[in-house]
Image (cartoon, rainbow, N blue to C red; front, side):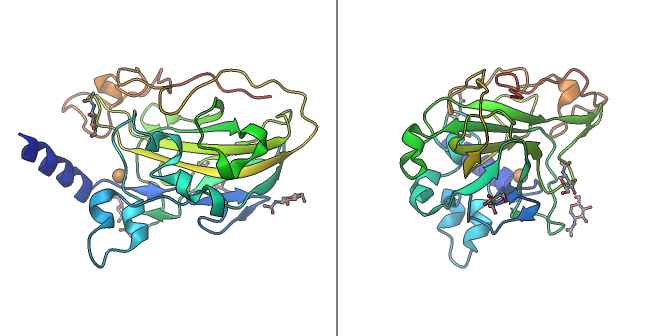
Length: 255
Ligand SMILES: *[C@@H]1O[C@H](CO)[C@@H](O)[C@H](O)[C@H]1NC(C)=O
Ligand SMILES: *[C@@H]1O[C@H](CO)[C@@H](O)[C@H](O)[C@H]1NC(C)=O
Ligand SMILES: *[C@@H]1O[C@H](CO)[C@@H](O)[C@H](O)[C@H]1NC(C)=O
Ligand SMILES: *[C@@H]1O[C@H](CO)[C@@H](O)[C@H](O)[C@H]1NC(C)=O
Ligand SMILES: [Cu+2]
């Protein structure tokens, strides 16, 4: 049984589906270099140990366990805290977290699912020693485009605004992308975190808080979805209908 589960997982990991990492922060209209402002991550444990496999290839594999510590900022991302640079960003400006590495050489996302963006201020504004275990507030959900399509499909990644009244300080900026499914505990998860220094007048009080891991549940209706919303393993004869989809987590704080 154990072997069966293992080989099924390997099959899922090695066929068809698209994978990605969000290694590029977009700031001031510029796509910054991969892993400069985003915490670098470890490769998927199996692929990372295969000979002659590009490390970037192994990094873009998803993880499946939403209770994993990888849910905070990606696989072993805290190990890169000291070497990740911090980007100064103006509150109220638009940023992006874009894919640096996808399965399909089109280099565009071809996963179906929402993207969400969260922020968490580092204690003492010390990002180099922040493991991301504090409170997070949500600043964006990039969800459905129509009843049959997701906004992120065939794009480089989410664009979003840092709320204009965000208290100035040093934050982890966390992007997540996943595939809602009608099958429990089968979503591919992609998570990465950037280091940002928010410059601005402040004055806002972020509301709605979440912990990662911990904020989401396997039975969250935005993760374990109705049959009509499953575009990964669709039920034959059931028409795709994403209407009414609500992504997991607290509401978006707009500042
Ligand atoms: C969910 O899947 C992950 C990995 O695929 C596994 O480690 C975990 O035990 C599963 N959780 C449950 C509740 O089945
Ligand atoms: C973005 O522009 C602001 C204002 O000019 C500047 O302070 C900041 O350093 C820039 N950020 C990056 C990462 O270039
Ligand atoms: C990427 O995937 C799409 C959808 O499967 C396919 O149509 C396209 O040809 C692929 N592009 C490349 C360059 O492999
Ligand atoms: C993000 O912005 C770029 C232009 O800067 C655009 O090409 C892209 O489609 C946008 N992404 C989404 C998901 O809207
Ligand atoms: Cu994938």
